[in-house]
Length: 119
Image 1 (cartoon, one colour):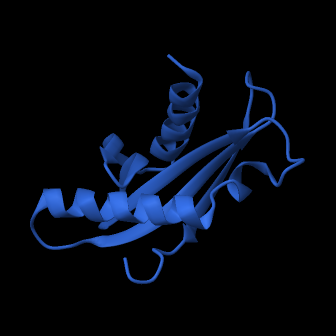
Image 2: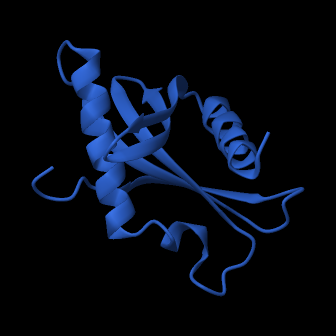
């Protein structure tokens, strides 16, 4: 298991403990990637997982730039087109992990960003 998979596993366990249901891991398309697609009731949640040991450069959550947000939104659009059926409500969350790798602090930011306009 590589480091990215380890952080995603921490995030997944945290979200599942909160009642979310995993729908897909690492959805890729040519325009972007979603780390986790979860279901929170009737809402589909695209989750970006980030880890930073320290906060000297803004921390894990601050590393989710507008460019990254756009790529996640485009990947979610691709995911939704492949599902068919009625379009569900969509939310974009960030799970930011920080601190020592052995016991990271987890911060779950619900509705951390909106899909950039035009997408």
